[in-house]
Amino acid sequence: MDTNALSLGQWFGDLGDCYDSAVNNHGEETQNYTIAGQNVRFRFAGSSLQQIYCPAFKHLERIDEATDQQSLTDLSILIFQETDSSLRLPKPPGSIEDFSPRGDIRGFSNTHFKTAFQPFGKIISSYSIARKTAIVCVGDLASVYNFERAAPLRSLLGWFMREKGLQLAHAAAVAFQGQGLLLSGKSGSGKSNTALASIASGLDYISDDFCAITSNPEPTAYSLYGTGRTRTEDFLRLPFLESLVDRREDFPQDKELYLLNCHFPSRLITKCKLKAVMLPRIDPSQPLSLEPISRQEALLSLAPITATLLPDAGPEVLMRLGKLVRSLPCFRLNLGPDIQKVPGFLKRSILEPLPTSSISE
Image 1 (spheres, rainbow, N blue to C red):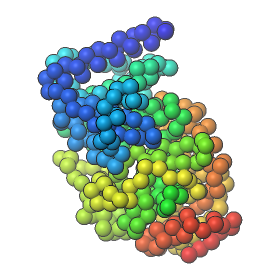
Image 2: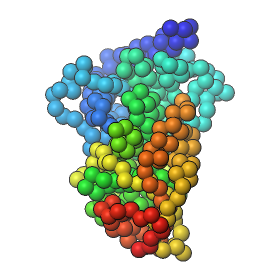
Image 3: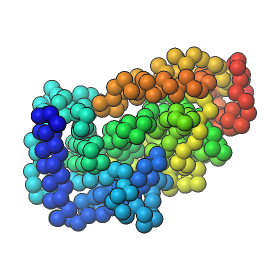
Image 4: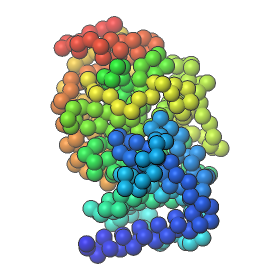
């Protein structure tokens, strides 16, 4: 192991000592989940952070005794508040110039360890690949944004899934009878509206923002979070959302949060086979319709935004997402003037043969 790896190992160990100190002060509580087929154990120093990190994974919770055996755990995540530890955190990894907008910390990720920093909440996430262990320290609970509750531990899961041959993708996914559609696009394209309208209309739900995907042995999307987020103005298109809002933060948020397990528990599924990639587009002047597009266009809507949101993301994002879109037909989904008609249109797209030319409702 090189010198940098040794220093990162020491830093990771010191962070672990801070977690142990917090456990000595507040006790330890655990939760077990199966995430994309992997057994993941959350270990909390006390109970204060469970409200942040557990609700999004409720539909993936395991309660059988088998996961109590450490040997069957694929990943352990140790989570604590800085203020709960009697020890001082190890020296911050780098100066302000070493932090990137997506959370990278220069010099603190290599083939052995990964580290990221989230400024909202001052959250440090560190992962030891060899130890199958991650540590999360929340420095300022009061400033945690609701996107942390909507997509918690995103950096860690991105690293971990990569080791397992899966790729986190910035995409929504909906399904029916085990067959699903991957919905890709930038913020405001309509993918969250489409996914939430679909779950309310009886389709199954994988994600509205992030899921895990693989092409091996066949194109598949795995659920990570049983949550949704939209802007407040989306209540005009989907009025039922207003009654689902979960507001706990004491400061304004850029989007509203919905804990879907509380409202649609039977519609949250763990995975689906993918039938197509669709790029939603909000344009009331166009009818509800599908237009075949190139795989290049689909990949450009999916890979760059994914890479910018995941610390330490590299060429594997393009490689894995490229393999996915090459294995599936790709379409532009014009959402039309009435979002309420979209779920039925998607259900028919799942159940019937997909078109080779443009079709309209």
